[in-house]
Length: 597
Image (tube, rainbow, N blue to C red; front, side, top):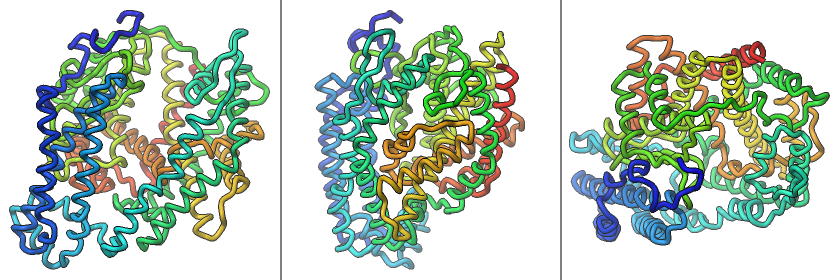
């Protein structure tokens, strides 16, 4: 790749994704967008008729499926074009019109779910067992799972009317922290450099401790100045969660968040308890970090700087694909052939161009390729892991859609990180085995330990904070800046251990995490990596049967609830065993890293 970042129009077609599996042209997309109005009217024609007969309900389901398929494809095409070049006004326009069409259709068909719930149980249960309902049975069962907590039509309308205002706390938090807050600057090599939300992370990775300290203190000082506003916003978000859970009749906000996916509360609490029991290993890691960094006191701004300097390593895109092929070989030739053909074919938008969204993602829909956005750089070994990670998502999507009808092909967020992290683990094991020098081995071990810590331990700490905050309010204690900072400081001290010396402003971290405005979400990262590590060990140390079990999980899509689909693969997330297994992997990494350093 050239040193200059190209315009989108100058990127070779071979480096871009091929969106023709969605629509052959923008004109075809326009026709599909225009069809949404009629498809919506086809569904609305069944309003008030869902309970009339099995034929009527089946007709409504088919009409709804046809609408949902087109909306998904229309939105995916527009969204992918927009992320490839956010400066493209035509792509912006398509993305905006797709969103508007979706919102209008959603509003017009909002009658569907409440009317479905109103059908007597005996009637709908007999209908859904008819052969012609085979493609819709799981969808209906999952919809009806929510029935105990669906309110009257009038009450549901009231809740829907406050949906927009319920986002106020999150929206204000986002504007305050991303737009209004000013963080000042940091002195780097005699120059003042701007400190922002995005550069903050870069400064904490800087080997110069003075730069890390200045960035940390300036950053959190800005949050301290607005602590009461931030605390009130988060308290508002928590109160909203509790209002919805109580209005619907759940016994707690935690139950309300987990009920839809049939995840028992014990899964959430097991995660926290099991991580607690293994905190001595985490404390050992921080002791090792203190020793390697050679500091008298380990500070909060010392925990992100790499323990091992980046190892010079050039891996071209095509070479990275072949490494994925070899590393993922335990999954069999069919898996690696499909993935590598996709990575080299039309699945991937490979490199950075002007206006392209940063980072990476996989966007799998029922129609078309399971697309991947990358910003691949040959001198970053992390980008090789990103390729394997997003490839795992896309293969999960590929197997899900090729083995399930549209109405139940899509898997949940609870399952989403399993296939991706599974691939990362196999690539790590392959690279570690192939490492030619001690520096590379130490670098890989350090990187992997940090990744697991960030996903398992840190997200569990976040999950515990959320739980404590919600339970306090549910027990009658209002949340203030003082209360929230106290909870978070106690958790910092618990998780980081006695080696860590915190600043006065360290506990403000708990009031700057955007994920907290989507309650009880972050725990899924921790359970996801736990399941992935357990399954990677099971497949690599097992035989054909273990591999086939894993494929049963990949192929299950949305046909089962997440705990059930993971049991197919051979891991029981309702027990603490997978969490413990993942923590054992971390413990081994820390021991290996100590030897390597």
